[in-house]
Length: 375
Image (tube, rainbow, N blue to C red; front, side):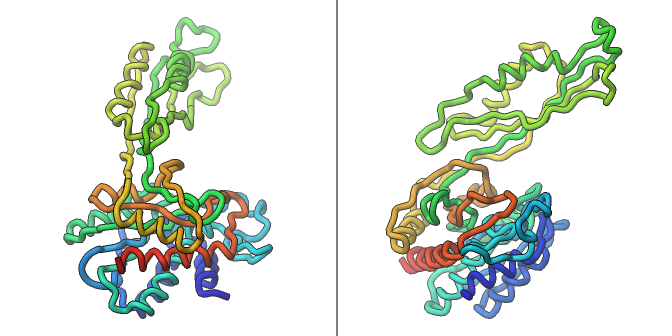
């Protein structure tokens, strides 16, 4: 059994449902300290974070990721216990193996091999790990970056081991992510008996035309780097629990995934304009973060070159999908890309990765370290 597979299985066996690290970072620290890494454990609230670095000077290359996983859901629906790593049919099965404990294992073993061959490598290699990526992401990477900035640490480049691949390992590299803007809308009406609608103001009925208009709207056409902005309502809640009562309020949750072709303020203003035109009495609160993009440079060149060297096929740059903790690292000026395992089974029942893919990713990471630090 390879070192990468063994470490991946050890990590999967720990039920680190966000924000519980469940000892995963301790396992990684045991591998990094013998290599000469200086280790700092940063505990913010109930979140466990790790900052570990080796080497001196620049460039400072950060290998980033998360040890927390989403809940396994209905355990009886799994073909094997989600936190019992299972080898079957050439795959490793278990919650978090693709997102992203398999990627972390490949990163760690790639660094072990690289340091063994180049103990006096130029620059600095660092790991930034959190147990709060799948959760609210308040006391995780965001807080670590703030801490590092106060220490005067400047990150030049960051490779995240998120599951970026689509059909085969290395076919897709995320060089950016759309922004995400969450809205919480409360529409006020007037509660009353359902048999006397003239004495009520039904917030559901009043909001419905605005919902239709917002859902049908086109927000932009995207651009060369990002697909068009999308808008979705994810939750509508109203009612008193009684069938004969018109409710007094309605709460709606919505989300924009927006491109660089539009700004947060433009999106907010357009939503407010629709709500006002429909004469609604409402409150609206926003929370979100902007997009990030790395169009080229040494990091992108090294990642694409390593994939081509190891696999023989070119990778495509992409900004599709959700988001990652890269959104907290990029604003400080760092180049950021994501490269990891296949995303096909992440967050699903029976999450799994091909054992051969773990070894392939290890080799790609190993070659990437050479291309980036020895250039």
